[in-house]
Image (cartoon, helix red, strand yellow):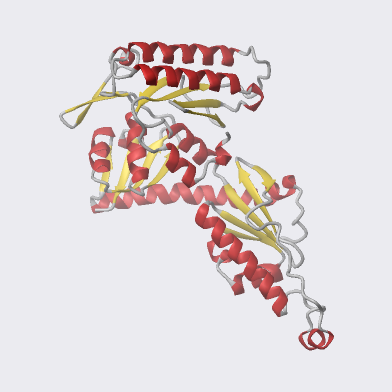
Length: 373
């Protein structure tokens, strides 16, 4: 699956606790590779072999779990499609279940045993591609487009493409209302736009993303007048004739608005961190953030991309462990990526999680939190 398939509900399912061990295998991949004998495929087989070896020697893994997970890993290997490679790959496996996720960002080469899947790479990839919706509105047709990482494709679902309702013409009424002369001025047009607005409300409730509206001024004005879609949009772009795309033209039209939105997002995060420091509702560094996330106090968690740390929890504090020797310390006591554990706990508490470029949080030991109290 691709990260564009990742919705809030899918992520919540992936983050559910599972009997130990929930196995995660990740590795960087070459998106240009096509043959099944690519080095990436060989490295993946080697990582799966390492996972099986660890299943054999881990005293906390039952015989049934060992065979069940090994079978799922073998099935995952058989399903890998190098033609779908992005910059990273994640394999999740428990008895009776496996999933393959192709990532648009590089991920470390790792085998992780825990009681949850290592979803941090998925969340980071999802954040990096910054999925968004584009709604193109016109009098005769409204289309929905799904965007990620600068790419757009039309979404033929969620009620779209939408068209005005079919109503038998009433000559006297049409003469009185003037609808044939003004496609945006009559009740039929308002019914149509209310329908579009309802579709968007449901869509954003189930899959919230930034929404960009495109259309001629009369269409955008009517949509704003009848409902809430315009209020939810991060940008309104006045340009007609694009309900049919093409995707390349729409991508170009929204590029500037997306860049402006990204800059606003980054500025918002840093501003909130500065304000929280002044109010003393702020935590920084792994140990401090780990303490407050357990108390469900985090409102906004900011993490540098690619930051990870292997630790052992000792007397409620974190003791760093050399990742090269961590596999020798078997069992669930060693947290192979405490950053992922913090992110998981923050998401469970309803916190907002934002990934920022490396070096952004250098003054805060690469991880910082704005607290609720």
